[in-house]
Length: 145
Image 1 (spheres, rainbow, N blue to C red):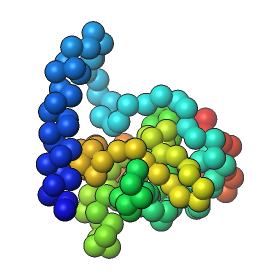
Image 2: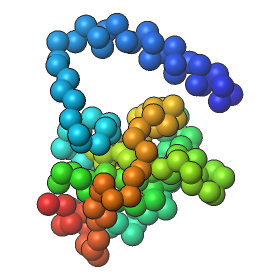
Image 3: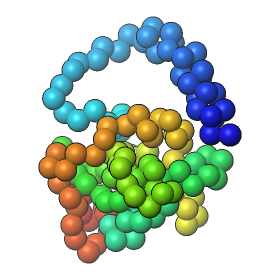
C-alpha cells in the first residue's frame, strides 16, 4: 500500500514539474535552512496551544492517517517551526524534519497536515544548533516574537 502511495505521489510531482518550472518567480539561493515555504498565517487555534501540549502530539494526513509526531517547537528568523518525527512508528527517531507551523491545522482536537508522507520525508533534516528552542509556559501566541 505504501509503495503505491509513494509511486502515485512521485507521478503527481513529476506531472506538476513543467507547470512549476513555467512559473516566473525567481529563486534566490541563501544560507538559510531549506524548509517548506512560509507564509506567516498560523492557524489561530494552534497558536492558543502551549509547547507542552504540542510535544508528542500526532499529526494526521488529509485521509485521517497518522503521519508523524511533534518532537519540539523551535524558532528561526522569528518564525515558528515544529520538529517532526516522520518515522515515529518504530519509536526510534532517526529522521526528524523541520516544518513551518503554518502548514499545520487544528481540526477539532486533531492536528492535521495537507502534505504527503513523501513530502514530509523530503523536508530539511533537523539539525541541532540551527534553531532556537521555544521555551515558556504560555500559549504560542505569547511566545512568538
